[in-house]
Length: 289
Image (cartoon, rainbow, N blue to C red; front, side, top):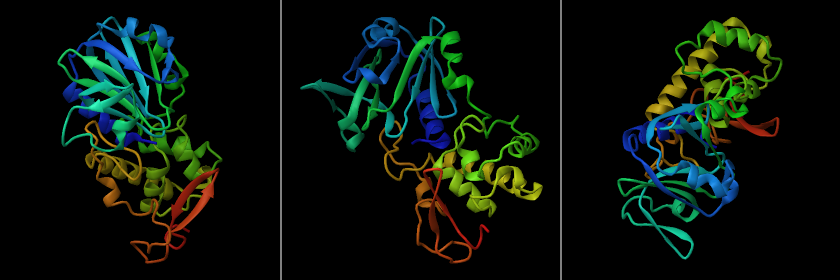
């Protein structure tokens, strides 16, 4: 699932490409992606609106439109928001651009927004788990999808003191706490592994039992790792691609995620892979005691 750096990459790209564009039509072949309003009403309600701003909240993409409307897209496990040109042939979207978007993402396009400049914004989703919500700005911003999210880790107001106070209240394993979207929004499996390896913290340790020095190390690593991943345009290990179908660069420098059996880049001890709460965790048993 795309995490904070991947979603931020999409948002930054779209802010450069589609601000000021008007939605002149919609096509979709997977109605279940549209959770609100009813799919039969979706095109009628959104057609003719102009895109004025795009933001990220956690792993959600928020597209603000004229008429005080808001479109929320959560890409879930295998979703991608793509910018390009397609035509519908035999019920499927076929790319009209050569040299771009030539990966499998084109085979799984299930929603297209037609823009007034002849280009389109498309949602590709292999497993059809993505979520699309549309309504008034006030209505969408009050949905649990946004109101139940925790702090933004890269927000300047998310200080080390606030982070430590949050952790001191949580009894769960630090790996799980970092991934809890109601506590900190945007961190998932990839970056929780990378953060804890950088901070030299064992993923099984209880958050509320960590020492001040350890919490400060996690906080510092979190800021460093997430900023670096944003700069490198995210991690592409399986599904994630940017708005033109290109892979992110963080996978080339990752230290521990999906490196099971490989030597730790600090101490050469083989990286371990374990399960924590049904999710994989990768760590060094020597460096992260």
